Each structure stands twice: as structure tokens, then as C-alpha cells.
Image (cartoon, rainbow, N blue to C red):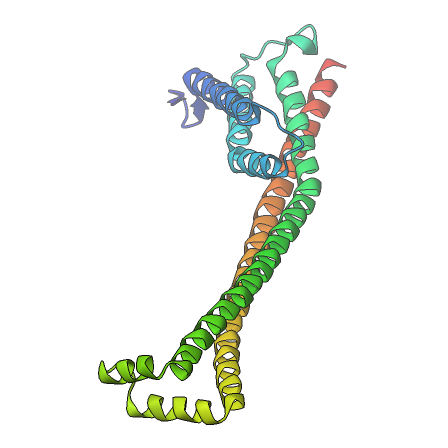
Length: 263
């Protein structure tokens, strides 16, 4: 809100605008600090997943107090323009001083997260990739066990037909075996080595197909994890760096200005 002088067209800021900006700025800062404290509680610094989620949450919320600081200082600037800003006897009684200190502290915090976050993401990504590799190895071992079991079961079924003629005839009569399968069984009867070659060939084909699926799934999971790690590192690290620069500059320049005013 502004007022206009009757003698000219110069726009003069309204005291209400200054009060509103300072009030909204202070509320934004306090609400953000409460949000930060809630995010940090309960602390679990030894848990890397907690560190990552907490840092990400802080960075995502980091712009709110920065806007609050800007609004607060804008309100004080309007007060100064109107000549309503009384000089404090000591900086400790000036809200701007504590706001600058808070800004410097937040700048330091975001600078630390800029350094630590990439390493945490790297370690978490490494652990996730190791888990993917372990799961792939376990799936391969389970595959070997299952194929060996299927091979033994299949061999037992064929051996039963070869050793029991009545069972073979019953299977033929019921339609469970077609002519090609019957001829194949007769070849197995005359040449047992052909049975071994046949079963080993079937197992080898199934093993190759399933191992290809496991390998493809592992490769897809690895690519996805690496992509997510890269995105998380770039987004959070760059945002944290920008916030660190913004808070530090505002805090340092503000303190420099306030110290110059009291000299």
C-alpha cells in the first residue's frame, strides 16, 4: 500500500506495507524453522537413509526461510525510507542482527549438505547395486536348483515308461503321447545316450533363456539405480549450493551493513 503526496506525484511507501512485510517474513521464517526441527526429530545420524531423506527435505524446504528473510529486510528498508527505523542501542536488540546470524547459520548448513550429500548418495547407490548383484546371484542359484530338479523328474518319468511297457502302452492309449514322442522313447530305449543328450539339451536351452532374463533384469535395475542416483545428486547438491550462497551473502552483507551503522 502506498500514498501520494498532494504536491507531487512521488509515491511514498505505506507504513502498513512495512508492517505486513515484516510480519509475513517473520512468520515464514518461524514456520520454516518449526518444519526443520520436525524434520530433524528424532535424529538418527548413523542411518544413511535418514540422512538422505532429511537433507532432501531440508533442501526442498530451504527456499521458504530465504523468502522470509527477504520480506523481513524489505519491510525494514521501507521503514528506513519513511524515517521510522529507530537506531538500536545495541545490535543484540535488533531483529535484523539475529536474522543475519540465522542466515549465516543456514548458509553453513546448506554448504555442509552440499559436500556430504553426494557421498551419501554414492554409498547408498553402491549398496543398492550390491544388493541387485546378490539377488541376481541368488536367482541364478535357484534356477540351477530348479532345473536340476526338473531334469531329475523328467528323467524319472521317461525311465518309468522305458522300464514299464504296460505303463507306456497305457500312456499311448490315453493319448498322453503322440506318435513322435513314442518314436522318441523307442530311440531312447535302443540308445540310452540319446536320452542324456536330449535332456541336457532341454535343460541348456531353458537355462540360457532364464539366465538371459535374469541378466536383463539386473542390467535394467542397475541403469535405473544409477540414473536415480545421478538425478538425486545433481538436484539436491546444486539446490543446496545455491541456497548456501544465497543465505551466506544475505547474512554476511547484512552483518557488514549493521556493523557499519553502529560505528
